[in-house]
Image (tube, rainbow, N blue to C red; front, side):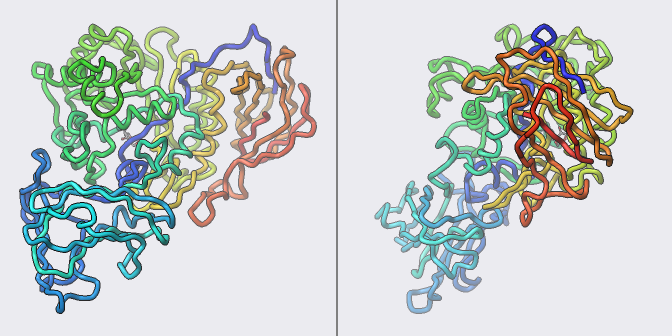
Length: 612
Ligand code: AHR
């Protein structure tokens, strides 16, 4: 393997090359990174129907002692459903635990001993019902924190907002929030929120999951989908205006592609905030009037275009602009840096796509000439019939095909829009729930993207997250439940590439009969401005490879092959990580004893190795 590390041969890799794609799929957001613990907090999930769907809320007591229903008496216009709880039991006749209602969150709440939880809710009772509020274990037999509504408000005869800071005195990963009374009477609840007080950068995101994301050093965040942006039907698509402003007033919506309700606490503002907190450029995917099953005729698309323009003003406008002032009222007077927008998702070729696209394109470019616009149409081998800064490219395929696709962009057109590989993954039988095999093929594919990063400027794996209790798409990079998480090999593979964005690409060449090798080299700068050479080698085959590495042209200011080698492999190429064995397939670092610009190395079968 020869590496030309001379400065004249080097080429800068775009700063944005590797980022993340976050989609509200698999409960990645609701019940995932958004740390709201109450599910269906406004009782809106069933719409304004009778009987309404209040699940997963469930009663404490029985049909004789407590009657639960919904009505439209909420103080909030856009989410009018409230919960009505009628206790029929008098003091003496009440069960010792009382009667009432509980919410188990998203397959159990993670309550940790000593940690604080902020509870906010709206309550009304004409009967001065004495309401206890507790965090408990899964069946309510163990109380982990408790208070009484009266501790916050003595008169709740009108809708009253109450809030508490609850500190847990015990732990469970399967907890619940409950409201109970031992008094006869009626009370109403609405917009019940419980969040840990300790969240990522204080902005409401689950810290443990976000630390895994931050470890990837993503340079962009594409959000909020995917198909989630489109919807099966337009009326179920994500609409940003319904997902901004006070959380209590957000109506929530049913995502009909991945089939679950979201309260939309994680909305447009929160995605922009998250991008900022991660130091990642936001890539805002907008619906251009097209869902999976219906579409808006280009003749009628103007309101959708205006909606997109408003979303830019929300992100970038001054605090005294119409939409910028809404952002400022949410606590971010400074504009966000929004420079990338994708017009639709996987919609090229559908009715009205090009017509609608052009309306969006020219309106946005006219108002915001620096906005980078991304088309859904593939320009890999053809010239587009419309202008674009980037074209979106998705690939889900077998391992061997993904490995071969390392050469996919070698002959791509060098003029025209740049490529944005916003979704890639090995899937189906080769991938299982995340195999070593899949990650090796993906690593080779990314090596190909590094080589072609003059034309490929952005790439992200998909999907990023799955809540193990509700898999809608497999495989995914990070698997989690209420309290635990692990990375699949595809997650760990991405860590090998986190220094590549903005680094110098150094040409490599492999002289071997084997067609199962892929390799690349970069020179990257650490935060203290020291330069390092990093060589990555994928061995996709089942033979051990003895490789001679020969580095030429290395400047004396670069730390050549410092001191370590990092290997990811396993005894079986189909091995996966799991909750019970989360480190079966992870990178393992060891000392590099023979570091030199000329050195012989042994590369294991089915492995990914970096020399750092
Ligand atoms: O990543 C899962 C889905 O795959 C995305 O929603 C969609 O864009 C693609 O089809």
